[in-house]
Image 1: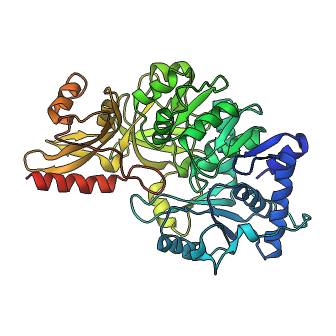
Image 2 (image 1 turned 180 degrees about the vertical axis):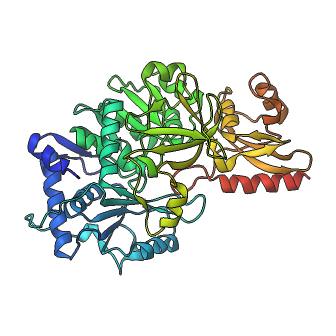
Length: 487
């Protein structure tokens, strides 16, 4: 069953700071946060919200995301943070599927008629609601996927999933009440809620909440707020490294940083390591936690591209196209089973059955496991291409590209080729322009020739999706257009 851990923490240490609100210059104690959540529950209850009803919110990161989420958990309602980067028609399509009982917004006038403005909302002075006994199977949150492979899917995060992700994360990453982190990743993304936010609130730690990410300001906040752990995507780490504040900054309290969402260049992680920061590669996705792997400091240093070993309550296997488990150092699709796997997709049971046919969730990611049991992510299954009869995994090629001096980011997509069937087209963000011949010479000692990209284009930055990940569809279109133009 779901345990109202916010209420318990408010009783255990009422005056301890739970949140530091940067833009409001205000600290929120655990007692205050729980009281606000209870008042939100009362406000929702007065508007007829009951267990299973959806409460949607469209707003940048702010205090109300957490007060209304915890308010929903007290009623057994389902909280749905929406992606504020989406276009209006995309958001309306999601609202149509959700049919929310309450729709809360802040700063989005296009939805003024059908929503309630958070900035004009007045909560009741007292908490007067009937608590719901939440079962571990009850859905408490819906997060929409990016939709990079089709229509975004509403992932149903049940109470047990949220708690097991908390348990796994606290245990394997050694989180405790003295830890401090940033709540800067958008709350519509699982990284916003489930990498550090909920685990730290469960542990009695402190979160530094910012409404938006500013690289230079974040470097200063990590230092001034004494952050001990930090999550980000490679783009964020690179922006912070390039900021004016980076060279002068010192991070004596920082235990580790973890990078997710995409492979992190070794040159980038090395730049943070020169500051004495322990840097880790991570893997996760909305449907499975997201936190599934753990790696210690020494292993991360010796195997910087590995995500480590499965967490203690995760069962992981790698399978081939026939569903057979592969051996060590062979690529296979990463399949995950455990109590931290989601309940399914909102009003799309058929798709979830296809993705999770035997209890193991098929992530669509390819990985390899070595003799020590360490996992390395190779790439997406759908991105694999066949060149001259040989399988090529773009993720493997990208890992070698990211290890080259001066390369800050890299992507490889497949394009048609009259001789080989398909070949790789590489995109680089680097310190300088590089020729294809030069690139292939650098790759020669490390990568088989059939895996070498046959085309190259250098960019100043990559196009991004709404969730901050690289827009590979746009890169593929550019690559195909570039090959046709050359031809």
